[in-house]
Amino acid sequence: MRAPRKRPARKIAPVIAARLNGHLSLQVQADGSIAAFVNGYSVNLGQLSRAAIDRARNLADGLPLASFAGKSAIAREVDVLVHRLARHGLLEYRLFSPRDGQDLVVIEPQIAEYWPQRAKLGEGDTVVLSRFSYLHRRGNEMVLESPRAAALFRIDDPLIAAMLAALSQPQKIGRLRRGAAGFHLKLLELLLECQFLLKLDAKSGDGLRENEGDGNLVLWDFHDLVFHTRSTEGRQTNPVGSTFAYANALPSLPAVRPRWPGKKIDLRDLSASEPTSDFATLLRERHSVRDFDDAHPITLAELAQFLNSAARVLSEWESDANSQGGSGITYSTRPYPSAGSAYELELYLAVSNCEGLARGFYHYDAGGHTLVAIDASAQQLQALSAAAEFAMDASGPPQVLITIAARFGRISWKYSSIAYALILKDVGCMIQTFYLAATDMGLGGCAIGTGNIDLFAKMTGLEFHVEGPVGQFALGRGKRQAIPG
Ligand SMILES: Cc1cc2nc3c(=O)[nH]c(=O)nc-3n(C[C@H](O)[C@H](O)[C@H](O)COP(=O)(O)O)c2cc1C
Image (tube, rainbow, N blue to C red; front, side, top):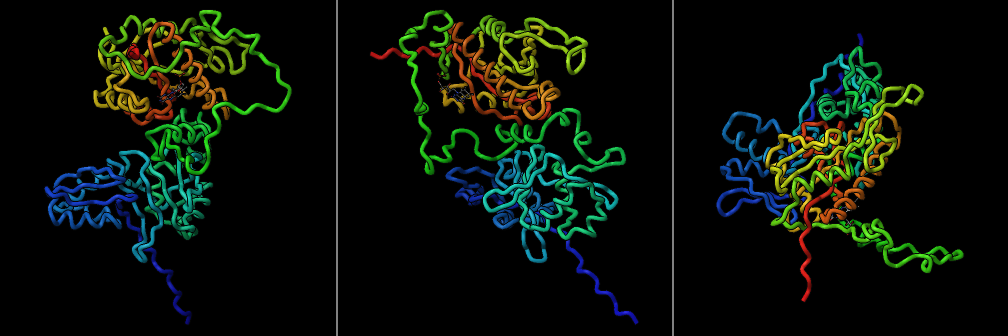
């Protein structure tokens, strides 16, 4: 008689739990409300019953999502608290094995709305990694990231990394379950929901570039979409801006490059020390203005003239039959240069104080030289202007905040590898044109180096990879500098 075959140990499904992130602690206040403390800041989270507070204490190690999914009064209280913490970006999510309590994966949200959701997968479904997914080392950890994903996944089990490597080719769920030691259906469903994975159907082919997402996504190179989402705010939680991250490790490079040792040709005697033309004077006078005179704001007529000089479409034309890329491609001519004459940049104006123009959010139709109102909420408008005020360390919001957005596909349709770099160079050309036009008109302005691509997407309803912010410029009538004495 054949000995009974030993059954493989049945895998127990991992559990998803919410956990307070970083150095966060929850404390009960004197008035019975609960508050979260992190790096000296506190967030009030409202009143909770004693029983709910006791259960919430488990958030320090991880509170299974299923434990507060029920209808009991305590579950509902904890559910409200946990969602409030999530909206403030104060949670991460462990996926752990109930057998030994070890983390398999820790999910770190990258956008405020993230909540662990699973896209259902069946045995017969075929999945493959998105071409935007990448594993890389962060400190002593391995993290899975994608510019498309609303969260990043810290991979704590090397078997899962091996399974991810196998997903570089399309895999049927049933086969993966039998063949990959790091297989966990729940994890794959979480990854699919976050767009780390694609589900292929019979028409999808092999999941390569053409099969992933809409036409606008096909046009993106991997490095360009990573660059866009990691050098802006809204879709990542890394520190952005002047953090002086290396101030304790290395000295700053000098303001002016040390001279090369070769033969010198002195130009000083050949150049006038004072400007010799109106244009040279304009260049000397240009400077950044961050504080604006709100008693005498910029007028609609001035704004119209500014846009007319700096950004208006001057003419439109079409490529002919002999041109590369085919005939009938439309082009325009504008006052600033643009790579390949693509003119992919669009202007969106958040108007806080402009005489003759209502507060609001507008698109500048450069072809029609017209402002078109966009129905954004007052709260979003305020958030946009307040971020600019903060970035400039200014005393108030800019009178007009111009967000420069790119229609990415207009340029990536033609250029490979350099599309995003060209867009940023075009932004530089446009910003200098804005500085000079503002100076020429006696107005003031300042470039702003950061921008929230998620906020813009919410304000316009445009997907972040279709059209989004790549620069900002604050414009208005500058405050007169007090004359000393
Ligand atoms: C690409 C770019 C980004 C900038 N970002 C900011 C910013 O976020 N906040 C700010 O206050 N100034 C910003 N500036 C303005 C610079 O600080 C300013 O140009 C520089 O200090 C030189 O001063 P000036 O423009 O008055 O000659 C930016 C300028 C450029 C060109």
